[in-house]
Image (cartoon, rainbow, N blue to C red; front, side, top):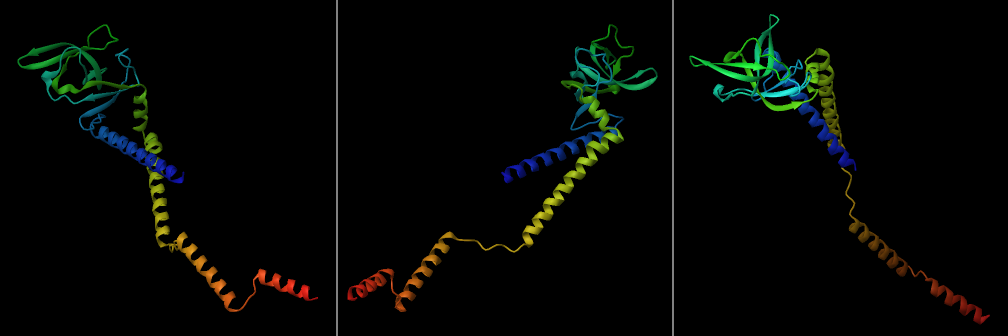
Length: 229
């Protein structure tokens, strides 16, 4: 039972470490790339509005992929791109409604599934961030946003990592103690039985050589004396 619990604890600790490292990579990656994390070409993004309802909602986490070939994009694809809203450069994820080509330059007219009008500005090649892979995790975007804060990073990243390394340090110390502790002699059951038999035979031989009487001899002597009387 102890071995099973130990194995489970090891698996959980390494799983937590893997998750923590993954989140750390995503957080630092997004910090270096204008808030856009990139992990082997895949881009996790938090949905910031309900403009794409019912496809996905505000607070959801969606996974996009880098666009290797601009010509592979087609109408009805959902793309994430940089645009200007209220004078600020922000990320936007909308569906391609129309593709325009002018002098070998492609632009994409987009619209949110929950919107009745197309976006004011088309998206150009230099604006594109990625194409949605149709993978979403409901509500996970809020968690990712929290992890990017100092409080979230401390609670969900630093503390679990500290616990993990303390746990590994404890196991290392236990192993050192076990190594330094003198090994207990191994008890061989067959050897114990052999020694017991040898001691018994030696005791019997000793009794025989000293002329010790057995219970039967004593009874015979007592009977003889009573007969003489």
